[in-house]
Amino acid sequence: MDRREFLKSMGAGALAAAAAAAGCDSPNQAVAEGFSAGEVPTDKMTCREGTHGERVSLLGYGCMRLPSQEEGKDGNASEQDLDQERINQLADYAIAHGVNLFDTAPRYCKARSEGAMGKALSRHRRDEYLISTKLSNQNPALWSLKGSAEMFEQSMERLQVDYIDFYMLHCVGLPGRDEEGNRVEPMEAFRRRFIDNGVLDFLLEQRGKGRIRNLGFSYHGDVRVFDHALGMHPRVHWDHVLIQHNYVNWRHAASLSEEGEGDANSEYLYGELARRDIPVFVMEPLLGGQLADLPQFAVEEMKSRRPEQSLASWAFRFAANQPRILTVLSGMTYMEHLQDNIRTYSPFQPLAADEEAMLLGVADRYAGFPLIPCTGCQYCMPCPYGLDIPGIFAHYNKMANEGMMTDAPADGAAGAERRAYRKARREYLRSYDRAVEKDRQADHCIGCGRCLHECPQQIDIPGRMAMIEKIH
Image 1 (cartoon, rainbow, N blue to C red):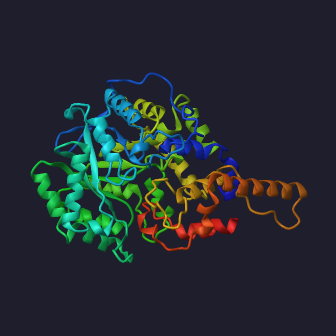
Image 2 (image 1 turned 30 degrees about the vertical axis):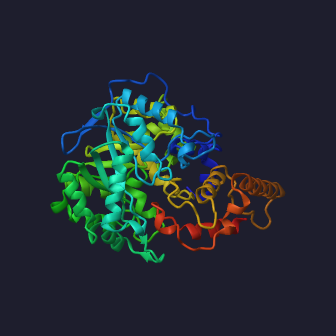
Image 3 (image 1 turned 60 degrees about the vertical axis):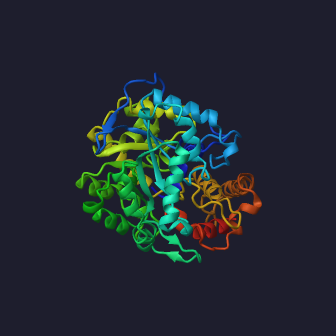
C-alpha cells in the first residue's frame, strides 16, 4: 500500500480514537465509541503466576497518565490538577473486577503519579493489590548511589508501602545526558546509572531484605544493552522485564525505528526472555493508541470475525498470547477503557492460528504507513524552547489520517484536482494553528537535541520538526 492509498483508507476520526485509547484526557474524544458491549465480569479475570508464586492479573493498570480535574489536561498535570476522586474510583473498580497490578514511576504525571496511587491504593488491604514502580534516575544528578537510593525510599513513602512487589531499572537501553549536557551512549549510560555506582548491588540487597519482592528492568532502545543486561541474569536473576510488544512491533519494531540500531522486534525480545524463563511485562499493547483505530481493510477483517469485539481487544489478545507474558499494562483514564479491557481478559481467549496470522498480515501492511511513531508519553517535555512536541506530532498524524497530506498535483493536472489540493492545504494550515499555539509550533525548534535522549521511541525529533516546518 503506497502513501496515497493509505491516506484514503484511514478514517477521519482515527487519531481522536487512538488518543482516547492511549489515555489522553481530551474534551474532544468520544470515549464511549468503539468499545465492546456487555457485562463486565467481577470474578473471571485471567491471572498468571510469577516467579515467586504471586498471582498477577493479566491486565495491569498503567499509571503514566491519570485523570485530571480540568477537561483538556493530558494527565501530566500538577498535583492539584489530578482528579483524586476519579483516580480512586478507577482503582476501586479495577480491584473489584480482578485487576491487582498497578504500574507507576517517579517521573509519571510530573512526579505526581506515585503519590496519587499511594492515596488510592492505601484505602485497600495490602494483599488486594501489587505495586510496580521504577528507578527513574535519568537525571545525571541522580546517578550517584545516594541519589538513586533516595529515589527508592521516596517511592516507598509516596506509595505508602513497606515493600514494592515489582521494581525496575527504568528505560534501560536509552542514551543519556551528563551534567554538561553531552550525549552519553546507551551502554555507558546503563553502566553509569546502575552498575559503576553500586546501585544494582543496592537493589539486590533490598530484594534480599524483602523490601523489593521482584527486581527487573524496562527496556527501550539499543538492543545491545538488552542483550548485555540479560547476560547478567546468572548473577542478578531478573524476576521480570518490561518490553514494548504488540502485533506491529512483533516483527517490525526494528524497521520502524529512527535510531540506527533501534529497538529489536518484540519477537526477539520475548524469545530471549522466554528462553531464560524470565516473566514478561508488556507496555504499548496498542502502539500508543494507534491499534485502537485502523484502516478500513483491517476493520472489515476483524469485524467479520468478531463483530461484537472492539479493535483494541484484538491487540490486547495478541499482547497476551505468549505464555511467558505475566501482565499487559494499559493506561486507562476513562472507565470505558477499563471495562473494555476487563472484558477482554475475563477470561482471556488465546488467538487461534488463523487469527494470529490475520493480525500479522495487518501489521505487514501497517508497517509502511507514513505516521510519526509518537505515543504521547511526554518524556520529551517540557521543551526548553516551548515546543508542544507531542501536540505537533499528533496534529501531523491527524492530518495524515484525514488525507490532508497528499502530494501536490502534477503539472497538467485537472483543475478539480488542483482545487481539491488547495482546499486540503488551507484546512491543514488552519487546523495547525488551532491545534498548536503559534509560539509552540515546529518553527521554534533550534535543533538543540535535548529531547533526543528522552524519547523511548527513538524519534529524530529535531529532524521531524524540520520536516513539518517545510510543510508550512
